[in-house]
Image (cartoon, rainbow, N blue to C red):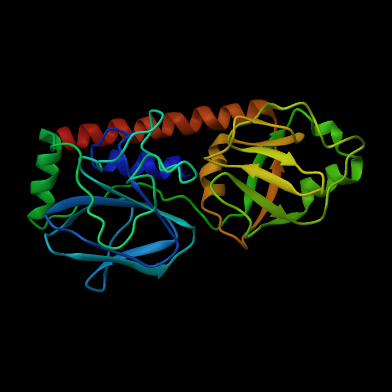
Length: 294
């Protein structure tokens, strides 16, 4: 759901950026490490700890064999990501390691993890990762100057959608100024938003058309649904807005009950934000590669 946190976590450990990770929603979890491992935690929602000592996020961390990591203290956000050097071994489905629950494919046998599941490391450590492992095991710490995202903001930037003009004038004002709450009837496929109902000047049914992650659809009841990571590829509801790519990770960290407010920007502004974000991520990746190689 939060691809930026996944990118950070893999880069911090010198993994390929597409290695499989654990996505942990905001409920208590415990993990027993059976061998010495280096890990990284990113995202939000939970604070990992080892023997009541809080572990840093966005930093590489050495975990000794037989150590129990607990994630129970809640923090802002909703999804914590855990990555191990070498990546997790996972089933592949449609060129992805993500778990697709409805069809029971991908990830760990196509289902959520449960007690006594055994996760394995996929790849042998590279030379760079072996150096990192030795440094951390010696007791030294590597503190990276990575600025964690702010998950407390409720502003989500969007651009006008293809069917924006289906809305009447009052509804255009409402969506641009009102706050909406993430409904409990939300999942990885889409976030249903609760708030003042929106109205259109014409039918809310369209010929099924292309949609993608971040597409804001308007249902016949006047509620909005923001499509998320497991979104379908076509839909029959008007597409009144599109969440900017740079703010999808922020939206992914919202949980049921959280409020959001849309801020409309131009397509050019959205493109500039996207290119700036890509440049920043690439700079971080290159810096870490040079750091570890040295």
